[in-house]
Length: 107
Image 1 (cartoon, rainbow, N blue to C red):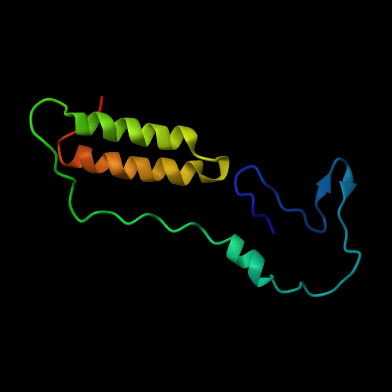
Image 2: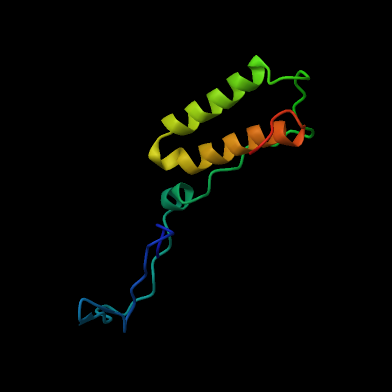
């Protein structure tokens, strides 16, 4: 079983690694996955999305927008390695709501 996702690999009988062929040593059915491991392998639930874009002030970019962008950047920058992708997704979702509402412009 490969739980590493990208760049991982699975070996089985017949596979050759470093010139050595994998073979069956004990022919037995696989054991059940322990519940504690199955729990650890569950994907992290995605954050809830608001029903509508977040409304903010009109006109020039407000302090709210500056603070929102700054905070989301800080969250991504300081996220632990195992949470970086989920944190980046949450930041994109939060800032995307501001883009969808026409308050924050890309590019």
